[in-house]
Amino acid sequence: MGKVAVGIVVVCGMAVAAAAAVVVHRRMKKSGKWVKAMEIVKDFEIKCSTPISRLRQVCDAMIVEMHAGLASEGGSKLKMLISYVDSLPTGKEKGLFYALDLGGTNFRVLRLQLGGKGHGILNQQFVEVSIPPSLMTGDSSDALFDFIVAKLAKFIAQEGLDFKTTPGRQRELGFTFSFPVVQTSIASGTLLKWTKGFSINEAVGRDVVAELTKAMERHGLDMRVSALVNDTVGTLAGGRFANKDVVAAVILGTGSNAAYVERASAIPKWHGPLPRSGEMVINMEWGNFKSAHLPLSEYDLEMDADSLNPGDQIYEKVMSGMYLGEIVRRVLSWLAQEAAFFGDTVPPKLKVPFILGTPAISAMHQDTTPDLKVVTNHIKDIFEISNTSLKMRKVIVQICSIVATRGARLSAAGVLSILRKMGRDTIKEGEKHRTVIAMDGGLYEHYTKYRKCLENCLNELLGKDVFETIVLELSSDGSGIGAAILAASHSKYLGSDDD
Image: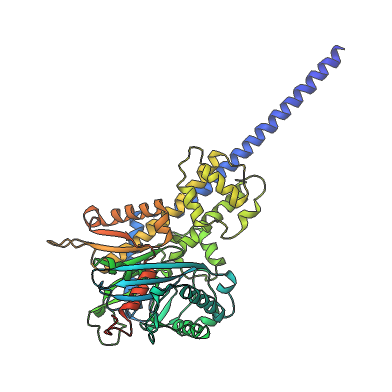
């Protein structure tokens, strides 16, 4: 009996020891994976770092490209496109005008009633429409423009009697087309390429105003395009209508771009007579900026390689709303694959490109609940991952912060380049001018931490005294309003009794 009892004790002891060894092994394995995960995050953070010295290098490189783009067509990755807007709104514009604002997966139809000098905008209405994905990458541009014009015609058909036009007078439209075009006049422009997820080869090389006009004719819509503008040029015009100190505009939304007022004499590629104003609005197309000084990680390079436009829009891909969430997703996916961050298997939805939108990373980054419940909900709803610990959720917030901070600080470097090109990055003795930059786009408007980071970084770059002369002014829907106002200032009925 004694021998049996001893045997049982020994066997039991061995079993307990084995179980303990398994637990220790699991803990060590789990600890090792966590160390690996932290190494991945730290490496990503280092590759995305944006010290002031690097931002100044980015700014210097962008200014070089600005000069090259102004010197000749094709001389720079920055297109520096001539907008043919050589005079901005004065506030005297009057009448009924429309805008069609196309620049992403949605477009807006807008109507403005302008009251003339001292009266501003008397009435404003708009409708926003989502574009079916099939029309964004289809074979035919006719299908896209027919869809847009059908919505425009419906908007007009629902107008009340107060908005009826004088018999024999066409309605006039400002067309905001937020893709790279080469303009040959205020109301014509050839599409260079698509961005922001659009890819309709048939439209490239065509005059987009002509395409829209043909669609309006097919639908029997009696309307004339008076002004073709980029969304950034429209935002600049809308900003100037409200504030005479506006000299530049920046879009930070799905995509990103900037426009500013340049001296016409500083544009070597301009071959016509100099405009009477001596100025010309330049559409930079800064999203296509590329430099060895941009802090890029392997996740950015892979995302670019997998995109519809590899090698293009590099600056935009690290700081605009379309891409921030995708970068975060790629980092999380690598953590899951290499460090079993979400368990032994990679959650299937984590592999779906662009499933994580920037509104979600904004919400997670700005989560102030003690247990990061907002992060919990988003990770569960989007990726169907429900077993996250608080420690894991803090890492997810950290990754969102790394991506957003890099984007905001790089956008600040871009703003600095415009201020330097215009000579507004210093204060001349005895002069303290006020520089207002009209800002538009959902990323800037709704992602508070991104906006504050941009502003703080610009303060760092300029210094307190100069920064106090700079105003970043939100111009919500500025591109559509600006397009309608430019249609008014370029109306074929200017000088008529109705005006």
